Length: 445
Ligand code: PMP
Image 1 (tube, rainbow, N blue to C red):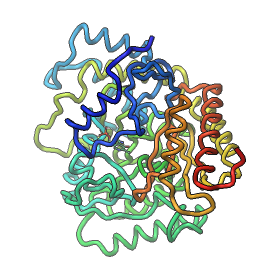
Image 2 (cartoon, rainbow, N blue to C red; image 1 turned 180 degrees about the vertical axis):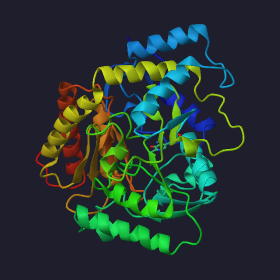
Image 3 (cartoon, rainbow, N blue to C red; image 1 turned 60 degrees about the horizontal axis):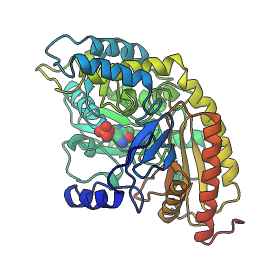
């Protein structure tokens, strides 16, 4: 049952007194989650929530999945950590499986402890391989909090410093719904972005190392380029020898339903040279990593290792979690349940002036909110919906590009059932209507 902990308000005060101001918390009365099971979590007061955010897409299969817990505790009883200086069976096992799944020919895998560190490594490899520190990234992107990941992140509200070890060139491609491209269809947008990329390369001196891109922008608000856009980019990049890094930290492992990796929606010109992963594979244990073609991975001519990357206890979690994901066809579940949820959310949003767009694929769905009847992003609406859904036992996320924080993010554990999706849609409908009324829209109560 639920554990009774320290009253949250006291913990909140202690949190604020000792942790950085920029470590943001959700909710006016922040939540202390003490327990989880399946798609549910409990707070310190014993309230139960249906969790549609999974600790930011990190609980990939389910909370407290017995298979993962058992694998972790069995490994923990033997040894928690060795070192990559010694042979490590769970690490080799998981590396082989990820290499085979990656779609990258002659793949090599390097494990890290986070997504930031994975992108950091991919960027180091690309810059070493190409002997260039110029990097292409998409506007509105997010790639992590290490110095190099910040240095290529396009979303300035998540880039705490503008200093960068790279010369970063930002291209269009991630967001079409606003700005100069808003009126274009898929083909026109793809052509315009490809032209923008060529124009950018034409104005650039010296070589460029890589393009890094999220196939669906996560913190940017679950916006995606049209299918095939990155393949069009890939053709241009190949003419210049520029590498393609797919940041699969949010989109990997079948979450998008139609594909196991996000890059597969852009596969016409072949797989990326590298992909990075993190979050979900460990189901909460800290696993990140890079998959790269051998030629790229092995271009470093000095030793490099990670103390915690590939530690046996995280690898045990990763192996058990991946086995569960594949044996239960959770990609298929993401496609089916995600498809139904998308339909339901579009139905409940119809006629609501605060909803500008319901979008996404698989179990990666976004609801973009505006002031009723306008095109103006409404962070207030998102705040109201977050508080209301929490009050009715539902956890969701928020984000959105251009500092607006006006997109609701839905990214549950991939075992979400149809009944849970229905329940979530019902709670969301009520919360959206409340926000609509509070912000002066026309929704009937
Ligand atoms: N890339 C993307 C697309 C992400 O969403 C994140 C985390 N939100 C990261 C990289 C960084 O991962 P981590 O927080 O594990 O460093």
